[in-house]
Image (cartoon, rainbow, N blue to C red; front, top):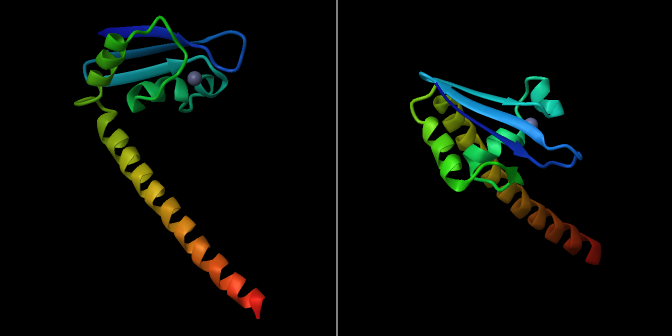
Length: 114
Ligand SMILES: [Zn+2]
């Protein structure tokens, strides 16, 4: 079993404690922030896989890369890929909404001029 523990300085005074472990194909992420304690996902471990910056304490780049290397082949991989795919679609939909809003606004303005 491989395990890496680190802390993230969030908005609270005390940093959160995160442990990510890989046992066989079982990838586990534990965080003691309010969301993590309730058993829901939180940015304190998700950000490592997403490559997003957090105020990490006791976690260097080589450890981040090691944790990321645990994802392929793990029981989390498929769900993670699906999540990334749907997030891409979300970004595209948001762009489309912005475009459509502009069209609506232009039409609205032309109506007001009359
Ligand atoms: Zn957390």
